[in-house]
Image (cartoon, rainbow over all chains, first blue to last red; front, side, top):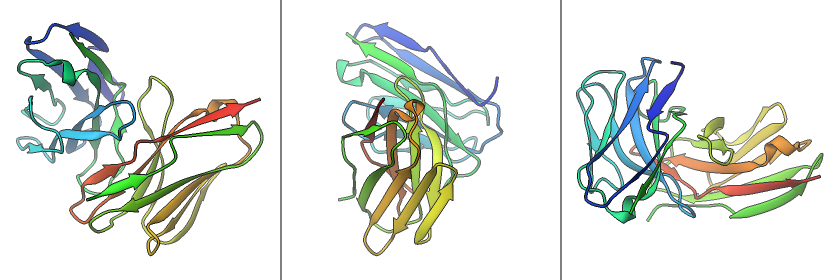
Length: 113
Length: 109
């Protein structure tokens, strides 16, 4: 592993299903983030974690949950997927929170039918 | 509200120079970032400005004017591989990162 690994790369799922997007980093970064990227819109922050054991809500948190049990892992869960959650999801990390450079994972393309 | 404005799309010729503008209105300012994103890939960091002026890094330069809420990314000696989207992002006073929608740059031979 080098940097951030996201899984799955892409997924199609039925509305109402539960889905967890996985994110693992090996840089020992304290801060981690989940963004969604939709055509014509800027990256929108879903949830973030400034350090292991803490999480916070971003701009568009509804319908999503996260956990940060350790430094490396930051999974994003959709409890009951809806079509409006069709998007590309990026996990990112930075050494500390604040005005710091983000390193992004390759993204997970999710389609909810 | 807070917003970042950048052109949706620009076209330039290989070997030429292009300037991508970004204007912002945010609650406070703690730095401005430029990221490059090739189609289907993750954004990657290009530059960071927190003070007024020009930061040069090889073929790429980034300029900031805090009083005007304005930045630009200057790409010189354009290459086909520079075809990508360029994302402008500003950190506000709460250290929230506000993102523009990105500028898609098309390079023609």
